[in-house]
Length: 223
Image (cartoon, rainbow, N blue to C red; front, side, top):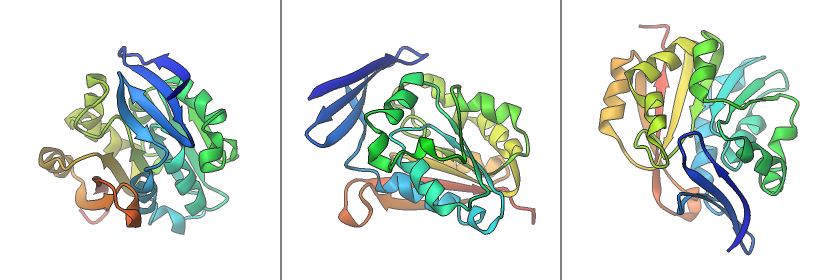
């Protein structure tokens, strides 16, 4: 394992970018947070989230959490030339890693002119952009059950869900990546006025891997 970079998040979590052969791994306090060998479910997150956005001429999409860029790349591949994709990433080093060693993994998505990066908590972006997005994709921590830091819990509580609802345009979609099922979060979404669907996908899609969960919340105009 070769150490390529290290950073400390706002909540004190130590992030390390490691390389083992042709595999890249991001560790959070010594535990594997993500790997370049398993990103199928991150791409599925974009596919589910953008089903309506792909039909629009100038969709606006927010991605919370850059990771290794796979969700961003899948989103860009789906959306039209007139799209705007805002990426909110709280750790500056993660952005720099994606502009450097991680860039080739997802074909340098940050170089796309449709992308705007905000080095900030995605909650701040949501609070300042009411009624602006056709889709909001959240891949922060390990989903509603926090892994690297409890500071992320606020994204998934009632107040966080209300902020997403307010930031979405009518018929907009919230898509949340999760390492596991979470019935309480599903109920919380319904309580927050979303129509809810839950999808289960493999980490490597057709090649297997652990099952991950994608929560979909629809801000329906029919309510």
